[in-house]
Amino acid sequence: MIDTSALVIRRAKESDCGTVLDFIRKIAEYEHLSDQVVATESGLFQAIFVQHDCQVILAFVGDLPVGFALFFYNFSTFKGKKGLYLEDFYVEKEYRHQGIGKQLIGYLIQIAKAEHCGRMEWTCLDWNQSAIDFYSSLGAKPMSDWTIFRLDEETLMHL
Image (cartoon, rainbow, N blue to C red; front, side, top):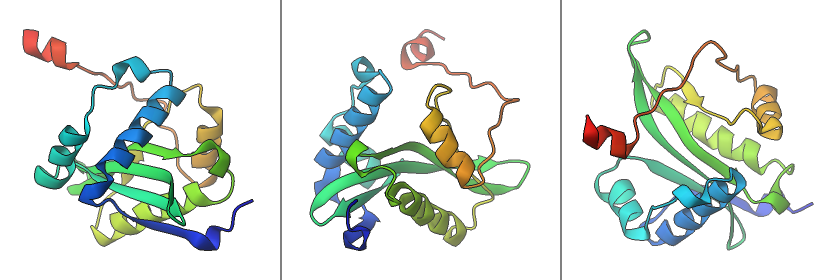
């Protein structure tokens, strides 16, 4: 067990783009999707700090980055409010089951509340039972009656 009193969660800074990219590569590896990562530090810098397409929070134990979450806002027409959409969430394997994930989610919940979001959503791979169990323990409900559709960039260009 680590001393989580040394845990610091904060928003990413411009100098953190390399760390963010490292976490993106780690989550892709965990999800068996490493071959799909084409993101770059400069692209992330543009998306996060110039265009404000998304936001990132990072968790540190001392100076060591141990987790991250990347999110953006969507909109619910039924609620008439924006929502917080969690795109990626990752905690280093050796730091899991120590409350860091719960604190990262708690930080996001506080952002959602401060921004008057109507809801907070994310997707989870159906084989990732440990994540499903974690999210369920928070009170999150799976949306089993919805199917996600996607048009990838190549398809978009051909339409």
